[in-house]
Length: 113
Image 1 (cartoon, helix red, strand yellow):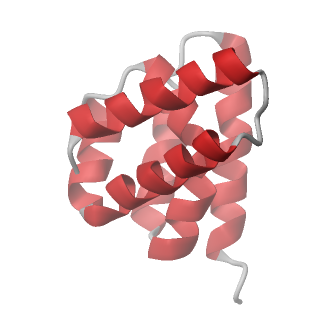
Image 2 (cartoon, one colour; image 1 turned 90 degrees about the vertical axis):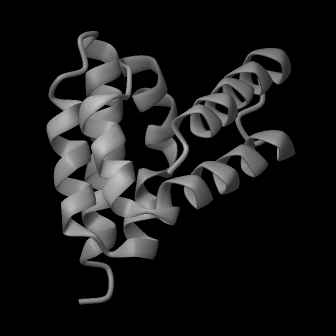
Image 3 (cartoon, rainbow, N blue to C red; image 1 turned 180 degrees about the vertical axis):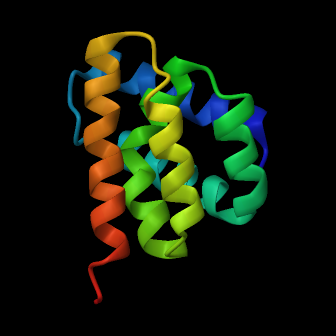
């Protein structure tokens, strides 16, 4: 998992959202696909990044793809890591928002059961 690459894609996603004011813009969809690909490359490195290096802003922006990452990897460790990290988000509103993303990720683990 390349932290700088992920941060660049997250920044691009944020820029597109601000410029277009359209959460379903094609560019945003492409950012989601790229973020998912980056986060699923090496789950051990991804978990380490999330737990030890990821700032709140980046964490909240990539929260949009947590469900996809969990669905693809079916990793309970990943979901546990994002759940722990979500509790540490300083801003209460951002914390509540990312906790919704975490719940969707948790639900995707059990979708096939």
